[in-house]
Image (cartoon, rainbow, N blue to C red; front, side, top):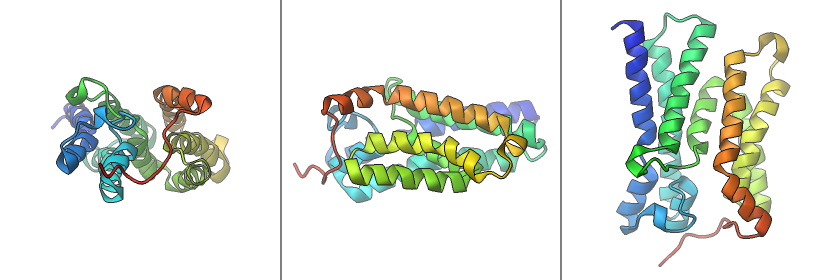
Length: 214
């Protein structure tokens, strides 16, 4: 298959993979409810945890993370002829397609999740050490303040800092398409969480707690 056609097929497949709402499916299988109408209303792993418990919440997170991982690994396997810079652009563009599919899922009326888990999958491939640092920072915030949303924002914000601190000679070795992607992901993630930020400031944001038994 010609390269351009392969990229187009991968872009559509990445978006479709991202658009699959595991949060909606698992909650419906768990208790017959629409995840968008319960808890925080967000079709994501944290809301599934509140409604269905830890195992289903973790399963949702794993399936959302694979959206990013699968996209980038398929690109590496099916497009091996690209050089480092060109491949990075294609790879990250496909990752963005998966992220957009998750956030603007046509299966949910173009109102999907916040995209953090899918972003974790992408970062797990492009810079895993930085991801570990970001996850630890996010978990620390969650443990102290018991807000999923705040932990997610701190983790996403920590990742670019980790990238520069952990990469030897960052300004010489930095992958500039990746830097652009990180900056875009940071801005979009904060935009997607802006309602959460307002609720945190108002003291109305839902905290981490045991799942609803009703």
